[in-house]
Image 1 (cartoon, helix red, strand yellow):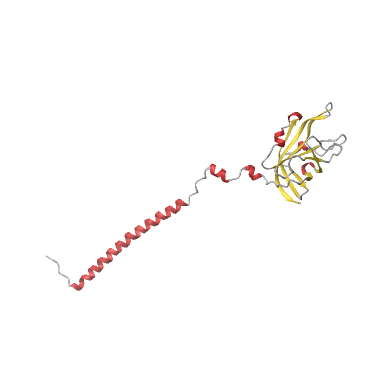
Image 2 (cartoon, rainbow, N blue to C red):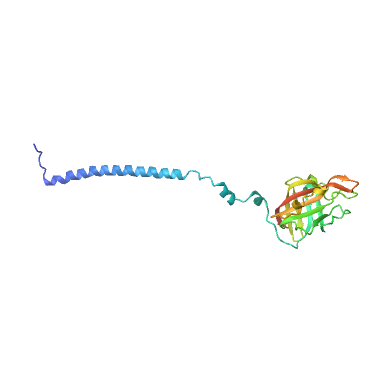
Length: 227
């Protein structure tokens, strides 16, 4: 038996009630979808917060200065400057300079005088500056008596007549036989400012009236300051 037919004015109420149920279902589905999208978005943010990929070693090396570049103070270029005073705190050295040519030595009669090889580099300019000093005179110790006792990391200050003081840090102290001095290491060109301190070493040979070896200090520029 068919049910009663509702009057037309009651039909919108049924339709309206059905629409409300459908709307509730629809909002529930949309809420679930939005929650899922939010979880995916948070997951992407978590992944993006992970530590960055480790850079390629070759690229990192190209972008970073080498240890040699980091340690070196840029040289100055004042070709007409001259060294005026040498100070080595570790040896209590405080001495003036004299200019030397290729085959000359500091005067033996003056124990506190350092020779600068004028054919080379001015200390603080690019290249190796070569300084020579006596280890002893006939009557007393001289300016470079203790040169062989210097150690790496000791500092050497060279004041110049242009108002600049160049500070060098010792890399090594080496002893060579007189006839085996490494000229290329002492006088060879360098890309930065370096210093060589040279003196006699080894035993004294009375027959030859000379020492059997030479002591060479190798150092590099680490500071420049106006004085």
